[in-house]
Length: 298
Image 1 (cartoon, rainbow, N blue to C red):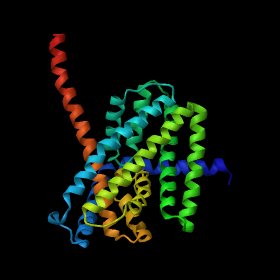
Image 2 (image 1 turned 30 degrees about the vertical axis):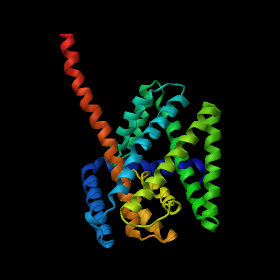
Image 3 (image 1 turned 180 degrees about the vertical axis):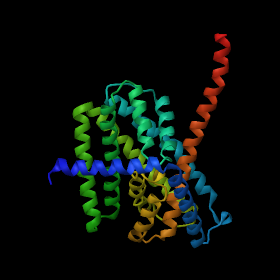
Image 4 (image 1 turned 45 degrees about the vertical axis):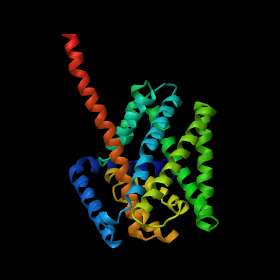
């Protein structure tokens, strides 16, 4: 089987999963939310954690990183537009990025479609948008792999992850530089690096909030779980997938699986809540402007 046949097979499987997700959208969403909620509660019970035992000051610190991460997401979308030779205001990118996060609740890559539509609205083509968004997503995965590898080095698995992730970063950065220039390529690396740093910091705060003395370096190991979980197209937002991967990885850094699931779950809920607030505020402001506009037109 040659390379083209293998790629055709992979695309066929992905298309079949997407069709399945679209057909059974409501049951999948309800099942995913139910399973996530149940496992979240069981994880808290396993740690004997209740609201009184939460360290709320750490949770506030975790929530404070969400706007910064959202701004970094917006900068990345604006860079994607720049890579296609178009311009997108950061304000527009901010709202579109938040909407994409909320859209990921659907059991198909709706968030990716929202971002692609934003680029098309800025004047880019669909294929062009797809290429640059795919490159940005692969860079996200490669950098997370390299960071986790660095945290686990010098173990064999850590070294392998570090080398593979670094090579992936170099290849994607070179591809981006050839098409959009070195400054845009460097911008992607800086923004993605900042996003990973914020993710590691927020996970650290989440572990502290549930009373788990996990170091910042060990918290960084779970970044890859979040990235991989969000890549699943059938389960909404990879709900429960990232947390499950994190629980499976917990043994690598001597963290309780229940603690890893809970910390990643809190991290996810904070991100969704922040995006929901931005989208909700935008819709309210837009609704408030319509009557005024209509009145002036009349």
